[in-house]
Length: 344
Image (cartoon, rainbow, N blue to C red):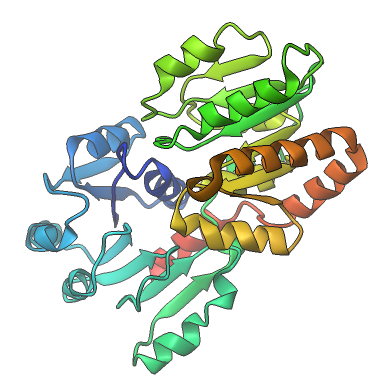
């Protein structure tokens, strides 16, 4: 049994939980089960719905030091030998306490400090630039590393998707499970400003996230526009990726799902932890970066529309972008992580 400590809610979204589900699914294919330690009933419900066992700690997801003793008690009762942690709210003391009773793996994509762990996973495109081995060696740690996009814990369902034929030109828009800044609303406002009532404008397929509090105003403002399709939360994005021509996304795991599907995309950022990936994708000429919505929402939306329109008018450019994106991930990252969790 492999144990995983992670959470999801309307503040932190679904990303942590979904990438851990991909790893848990890979473990199951290898004949090993995963059980989740979670802070509250909201996360417990999602784990149960995905078919995994869980232990609800009844703690605050953002005060992990306060839950450490309770977690350790449960770990000792279950003779936990290996634990994977995926949370931005870890502290050095929290991780050190876990290492006293079990082997510890940690998924890092913020590079906030030197994490005292036995295995560190950073699947981001920029992770090879962060000098992990050198810095951890200098700190006296013998940590093992799983770095780069070959360790992206992507569900294999995103690989080798067959294109779904359609007549209209479609742009997929995903802005995360929460979208507290209402990026989707700002994009749709910019879309209508640019295209007006032009019925030849591209169709928009926009996913309203699980924790999005702007649903009613979005439906009220854009629900009657035949070019705009407001969609409920999706169990996965496979069908949309297979049936859309371009995409706008606000960072996170979805970027790598779009890469697997080869959908030419444009990136905006809504949080600090997305900045390095967005800039590296842009630097490598894989996905253009339109800006940070926190500092320039209107400008970011305008740049995003410019990039999308350029792709729409230049099929050769879009095709080249698609080919570059497909080289980023191979779909075996979750499997590679699962193998490491069984042996580290």
